[in-house]
Image 1: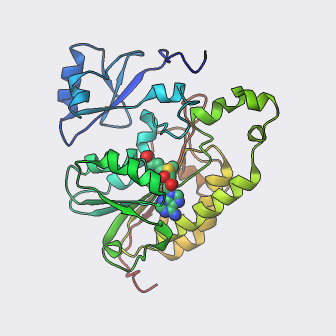
Image 2 (image 1 turned 120 degrees about the vertical axis):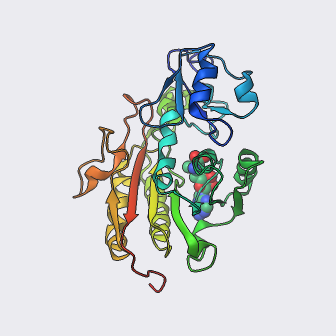
Length: 314
Ligand code: SAM
């Protein structure tokens, strides 16, 4: 029963597709039927009362607002692979976006199903270029569905094999790296212990250190690769994991390399109170959310390069 009852206790988040409509008009329009308020952190995010049913609303049908499918979190058993994005996990897109003033190239390195890719494109207001890279063939199809009718370039391939010195990658100014992770900060993983197989002592009830280490090894490689793109000024690393192994430890491991490339850790959303675990000097710049208090546990690190040295020869 737990996973069949729609959750009407949590507010409903919707994102305004600012390519099609401005936020104030959306508030006015939705305000005719619902109590709407703007999120205080993410400017294009609106919060509606729990249980608001919007799926037939003309703004949704016309793609002017995008719903975050909280039902998916409830029906996680049937759809364990579907994205678990709620309003808060829209935040990682903001790292590269605060850099976007005019025409720049942004690379979404591990992008399917494309939730953050389309958010990026919307924030760029049709300027610049978003390239979305995805390794997995099946997930590329989902990515293509998500970005349909947009100007986003889909690239089916391994991010690790992209040569940072080759155009167009040599011109990329910002990278969003949201790599495969354990998903331990999402509702689906959190409710894992309610599975019958768990009660029977299924292996999934134990934190699988080997799996975490494997994921972290990839995450470190991918982050180091992202930092090696010569024109990049911002790299956002995000996970929906609560584990230090995939979060602070990954960031810490690339710090010497990041410094050699002229990067520093910057503070995404300085007004947010929950920061990284204090396991190295500078970890207070990192951002965490708490899976109980904030409903989802995710993590953001923002690397910024402010100098103008030529990194194309490194
Ligand atoms: N950012 C996405 C969103 O918000 O919709 C979610 C990304 S998901 C956490 C990570 C994705 O990275 C998966 O689709 C996975 O197939 C892809 N991936 C894993 N390794 C990759 C690689 N080496 N190159 C490109 N994509 C990769």
